Amino acid sequence: MLEKIAEGKVGYIHYTLRDDRGEELDSSSGGEPMPYLHGAGNIVPGLEKALLDHVAGDKFQVVIQPGEAYGKRDESKVHDVPRDELPAVKLMPGMQLVARDDEGGHIPVTIVEVADAKVKIDLNHPLAGRVLAFDIEVMEVRASTEQERELGCPAEFARHAGGGCSGCDHGGDEHDDDEGGHSGGCRGGCCG
Image (cartoon, rainbow, N blue to C red; front, top):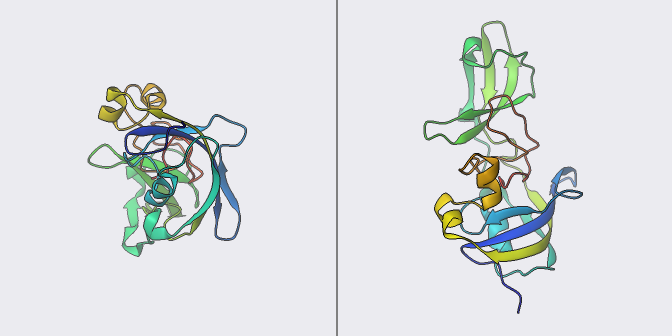
């Protein structure tokens, strides 16, 4: 009998993420399936709910509203900050950076406008307010280890992030630096 995705299980999925216009935003196609720990918040809540009880071999599509994905846009998260508070790199509108919050988590930062002394930044997730459509294929489901449950992520991410999870609150092929951009999708187990 095939193991079902449930709380505390590790699921491995291939996915293609599209926006409500059908534009592809991210995909695991051609690469390794993305592992995540079910119930640990590694992926957006709507996708996690849709995956519950699926087994290896299942293929399905799911459309997720903003409230079950990255939330609504919040214009109070658009700020002007002094230029010298940002990395000493050439900043351009549309550029995405990753900052750390007070708890050590990751915050996506989008550059909106650049002036000599100040920069307008947007702290909304790049996919905030957007409807997301996923094509999903479940590749494998397995029991998690005690260590994975303690860390809150699959072992593959613990190894990638030097022993801990990589702050699974943003999308993209992230690495722990302040200059990495991201596509806003799921790679790195960070769909949520």
